[in-house]
Length: 326
Image (cartoon, rainbow, N blue to C red):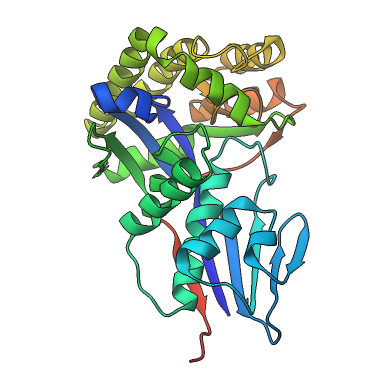
């Protein structure tokens, strides 16, 4: 039996510039962090030849091609496992539509677990690039590349997406007190609304050429935020996230709505200095940057929402149990 733990993520700034339609001409970048909420993947050999998947549903099939779960199916295909296996996932958050990068986290985690099952050691770059290939190239998802890389590498990262399709992962160098300040300022609330991100992202991809000025500004904000927090100015992140959220809402029509705008405004009135919806938008989790002395006021203002306590996670996808027997 193999158990792999893979972190979810929140993206602070730069989202949208990790789409090929943008970075292949201008280079993209994001400031993102893994968080201490995870998806777990369990792999175990079966006595019989069939493949069994366990997630919110259960599948038991004779042939790989019969599997309905696209990400798990293509991870099995990529690693070359076609029979006699049980593959299951469990998560710390709702299974779909959270905005915390869960789909890519599942893909990276499955690849890591399946390679470990075969006795292969693979690096984070391999996991991330193969997850991108599965989701973007094989399955044609209208998504970018940031989620796969932050899930594989972990930590708080500045990720550059280069025109030749390579990805450069840079460590964000933080003093201990700055890291602690960031952890103390992050608040995450579940809006109670899940959404299908593909329609929002599809519209965003379709309109990249007409949104270039917005995307350039989002990219600039990511660069500025990295510089400020590396200089020790943690408090700069909130206002920069606010500026980024105002811009991001213009990328597609369903990124926000009146209800979400009111929740966000309530958080600001209660003392948060900035924030955003995580992921594509439309629902999922609301991330706020809030001074510690204002946290209780924000909790009261958003008392109808469930808070998910969160801290930044240093590690990426990793094997936490390996009972492999040759």
